[in-house]
Length: 295
Image: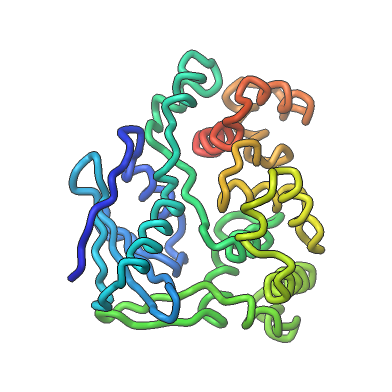
């Protein structure tokens, strides 16, 4: 079994990452067993199943369990994926210094030290997941995602376990209400996920193109797709690219967290949220993450 290590910052908690990845038993795109995380990704034409574990505080161990020998370039792509997935390149020292004595975030960063933005390196998956989750609770969103992945994702069995890949734009672009409504997608969501897939298939939207754009231009590009509003665009830019200023200002969770932590009688207004977030400039996405965690 091929095995190698990836160094990590002191301000990284594998335990907190695992907690996030265990949010729903309906998740099909990765597995968590006794602090081992396993997942399948596609690199070129290879389906690679890998396992992650943290045996030493300063590194993650990667084991390739699919038995496929990796070329050096493929190993580099796998390492890049893992770094993007677990946000391993972010140095949180400046953020922790900024909010150390902050009444709102100070206690949260102390309690959840090392918690990072578990990302979605696949921009298409990130956008579709954001649309699936619009205006429904998290567990029903996972139910829809489970049905969607089982129905249209590619699957492979390794050591008796079934691993899935997220459905591709090629597959999703030709779907219709006839395919998605029986899964309990609304007509709107059915339409939107197909339009997103078509935008990717045509080359109008790609991760590579967006990566070259400044934040506002990237957000406007995403919002040019019908069904991708401000919240969805911000969510995808936060989870896939980690633009620091990408935070869903109108997110109900952010508002509820502020209300709870500040013991307010009613939820804050958008202007109040903007004022609170001014002090976290450059770290808005992380401020959002820790507010969500408080819930």
